Image (tube, rainbow, N blue to C red; front, side, top):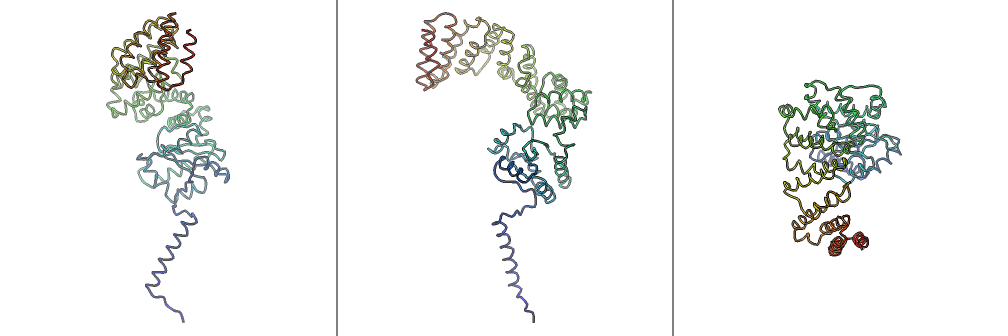
Length: 422
């Protein structure tokens, strides 16, 4: 005869079974998330795991507060996505501002042009693919997009690791160029990015092309050369872009182009007149003349020095002194050092005592015995030494040493200067 179970006892047993099962899973580390299982620890740990299991490594870099990253997160937790990625990859992720992310960037020499960004490495740790997935109108479409990204990463003929051969073979499809450009920007290959940008300028020919969403995206994300035809059109038609896109976005796009030009691989090739044009372009973007002048001062001085035109550099700095609202002791100490080291003739020397006097007058009480003040007197002594006025030079060198001693600076260079002047 079968014995029936009391309903209340049955429910209790069922509850206890479910509880123990969940507790057991937690103790054994069995994953309850149906999505991608991301490894804990750092990037090196993930690479070592990928080597052991002979699988590629998938890396997600996300930014807290980024709406695109927040839209991606639930997609990566979907079962279909988890089933595919867990079967084909070892996975690891890091938040942009974490120490793990900083270590990853240093180890692989990459930057993050936009977020989220997905990296794929082979089991040896070599980058084979990367992607910046875009939001999709539905969850299902987004799932399909992320699955496609993974499938492409597994295909040697389609992943970004194949782009170099495709470009060399003449592929000039617009989306291909954009994706290859993002790849090169991420791995910091500026020379190849310049080539791609030239190809993009040949693809986006008409005014409609250049002001289109694709054209503006290229300007925002990829163009790094003020002289690129797309840049030339952009800066000469700013009002046209401002009428189509938010003024803030237009300003940021222009400033990024100028920044990359001024500090990129062509930085040392611009003439004084070209940098002055850049300063005017910066003002056209909405930067105040004073701020634009401050940002480009050193670049203009460098251009004058390349032309062996020290007097031109002196004139430019003196003009800046008149209008600059925020020059201080540290600025004068730095620029005196700059002229002492980079000038190709002695035409600047008579200005050094004037600049030193102004720097001393501008010193705040806490700066009177600072490293900056010691440096200012050191450079003043250097200038007098070059002028042959050794007694005045020695006096200022001793002043520099005394301040450096009070500021608890390393005294060697100050002592060496005095020894040289004796």
